[in-house]
Image 1 (cartoon, rainbow, N blue to C red):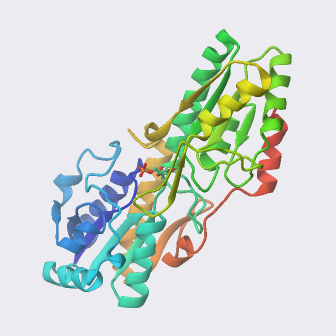
Image 2: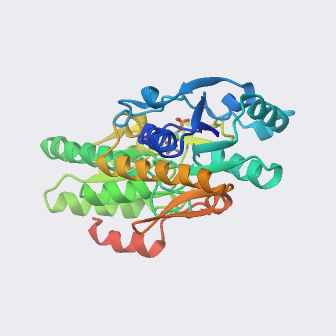
Length: 342
Ligand code: F6P
């Protein structure tokens, strides 16, 4: 049996750990051969492959990024894309495809498996942790760790100058990174896309923090928006996923805070540093287990399924379950954390 592997969408710490685990178990336990496809769905679409065997995965466990490369190519949007993929898989003798990705990559895998009989197994990845059907995605813990360390550092410089520090973290549609890093880092306000914020209320929290002789830290997810909708965004365009890309909420908010409270404010946008570098131990653990279970799905001929974490167990769910809706922050959880604001 020859198994293809691809990684699609934005990169994420832990991708290499999945690849390594699937290849190690597939070769050693089941005697499979592997083919790596370059740059997500572009690989099978164009028949662009890299050798994938035990020597190729040696030493990649702690490495960030993906040795296979990644892209946002969507074969469903290309004329004859599905036929080309099927032809290339047949020509290469690939009988199963492990697709590691987020909403878009897995959406393609679900469609190819369900409607066109392409034997796909899904592995969920995103630093945003917003995929349904799995308790956690790998990459999230690493991103939260990086953001928390940044917040810790920003506390000391904020205190030295008695300034407001606004920290913008990733999360276009869900505020998981903001919520977890903000709580872990002792932020005085956490603003998430799920709950439009009231600028006056944020300024009230900032002022009360200064009254207690502390310098406030405000963590804002990149997709958070003010309740009154008066935010003028620096840049609004479509990204290569076709999603609306908004940027600048951190800077906008810092200006509003300065104007309304008279306190000096600075913004730090963490950006892609949250996605780069070596995965945390938890992400290596989760990604490795996903890889081991993904190759077991292949062995069982259980296609159209995605591996997922439920509690401490790895389970199999239909790939479509992960892409049907986003997993967003529950208002009750947000309220629980709100006790620390101000
Ligand atoms: O989906 C993961 C993510 O990191 C988002 O949090 C972020 O908005 C986006 O990717 C950034 O994508 P790009 O690498 O295309 O700038």
